[in-house]
Amino acid sequence: MPNDRFDALRTIVQQMPKAELHIHIEGSLEPELIFALAQRNGVSLPYESVAQLRQAYDFADLQSFLDIYYAGASVLREERDFYDMTMAYLRRAHADNVRHAEIFFDPQTHTARGVPMAAVVGGIFRACQDGPISASLIMCFLRHLSEEEAIATLEEALPFRDKIIGVGLDSSERGHPPEKFMRVFRRCKELGFHLVAHAGEEGPPAYIETALDLLEVERIDHGVRCLEDPRLTERLARERIALTVCPLSNVKLRVFPDMAAHNLPALLAAGLRVTINSDDPAYFGGYLNDNFEAAFAALPLTLAHAEALARNSFGAAFLGAAAKRAHLEEVDAFFSKASHTPTADRTHV
Ligand code: ADE
Ligand code: ZN
Image: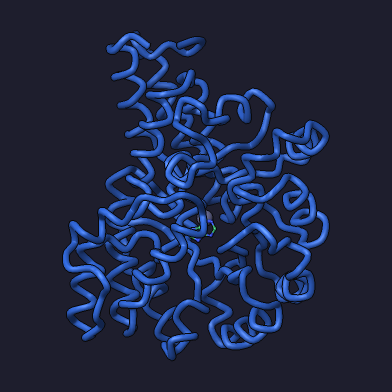
């Protein structure tokens, strides 16, 4: 792409209003904050310095990342640790023109170490109330643990029901199909939670199908492997199921060999309701705008795609109708101005 055209498009994706729907708050823990919290809480780390920890961020696959991610989260002990981590993310997201974030958290990573559920939910929620953007919480069950443990976690979280809008499913995907969690998701649906699940990141397209049919999820986190199954792809498009795609994560975890090989353009061309997200920004090389910039730099994406991605992010959010409309009007206003920028071509790259 000619440089001036890309510069104009980069400015647009940076400045456009957007929502983030796939961010693990423990994955926003920067090495500097890991070391600061380790010191504050007297936790010893198997790394000598921030630089040495950062050097370890070279992942072969999802599991090799998760091992380091859970080790990093071990410095979180007190309510204020969860608050500080969440506030740092919200400020960073605000700088990227994120207007609304739906934040995943993994309570089992913390309660298993004796951290009270009240400290986890309380600290994250309080930061969301004080932070510069609107934000809500989605509690994830760790799929490498049992369904009984997920049910016990749900029970423990019920006193905080009003602080949590939905539940999700994350951690090691292969060998842990969605159907393992059918009962707990059914109970969550009865309780009125929104439902999402990671599926089709490393796992096969069949996991996307069972997440929809057996867990009755409303969005699929990642879902990039859906294109291996044309029937499923058509269904996702027809049912307007949002995919929360995380480009830098997919490259770092070797779902794709490099950004130029990412299937984002094909997902969009298939008519899917794609959104762009950061997943674990402290580990994968960037926050939401870094993901947009990397994808737009390497792939044949246009101004029309930028607009669709911004619209999809609010359209797929778990927001009330009035808030959604207000955000979408802001997107419309932004793009009606942007489309008059001569270098930002609407039709082709
Ligand atoms: N937990 C944090 N990031 C994750 C990812 N990309 N996939 C599954 N579980 C996760
Ligand atoms: Zn994720």
